[in-house]
Image: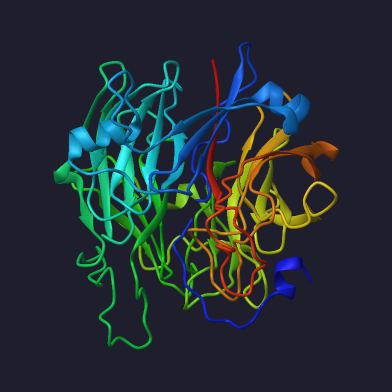
Length: 456
């Protein structure tokens, strides 16, 4: 039994979903000369905060590492421009709740999406200068770059839109491609079925098609789009508008997936818990990439996935995925405070290890990225007052130690250990507690989520 399990007070659950995941290809950052940086978002406050650490300092002494810290709110300072300033100037509104973070393949720009507003911001990585901001509408839950750097795909969660931003990084030119947009609430699949069921449909095939986290295959054509209510679409992200190639029902792909990773000719996708209809969920699937046609479309639920792990009856919540150098898939369970290890040759679960211990009694591991210069992973840890992806009373996303964990990758990828922690705090002296019902009282509002690594 985990610490969070012991504070359950019921199964009433609400969720603002949190990527997972991280759909930045895990091999995009490779061992090379130069300094590595860890970028991470804190969702607390209005716009939130961006922290940039020297990865070597975190590796050597995480507790002593001192980051650059950037407010993402407008600040009305004529000498500097924050992300909030740029968004306000270019869109007329300020961004709310920095959530997901990614780098373009060349690592010249950071891409920051705001889950409580529709803003997607682009930041020059070397200068830290925000150069563009686009408001896609209701809610930019996740925004990830195509492998060829030609566009960014945006999951507009509550707008139920999949959107595309055309990108020219050298020119700092970013344009919302309106013609590419797909309305996942009103569209029809190539098999003639509604993308989203009517409210009265029983049994519901796809009751809620809010997109959560889109994941690219290595070619950049196939786009795996997970859905809040379950089911999934595989789309051609290069067509205009983006086109559905394959459709999956919620019985085949369960809700709230926010992890995707392409290796060995397979796409690995997860499912997670965290909404009222689905308080706890943990599934890992593999899809054969050669089963998706270069033209046309497939029958329903085809090609069929292999279900590697399924824990849908307890305190589990799959979120971030990582690929080790040796080719093992790591899957973070933020509810159970542990990591599952999958052999990607045999598609079997080969180990599970806990992150609980003297460094953190309740880490709530969320997203993971690999340190490019050694066998370590950086893991974002959630806080005691989570703003997204948490179910009050169940508290699947509540953690005790918000920050960046350094986790060793041991036994050639089969095992690991939480070694040290760079804490991120945002203590609010004005409240006795901001924690959700059923969680220990705390006035630390820090809620770490998005994480990415770059070299320079």
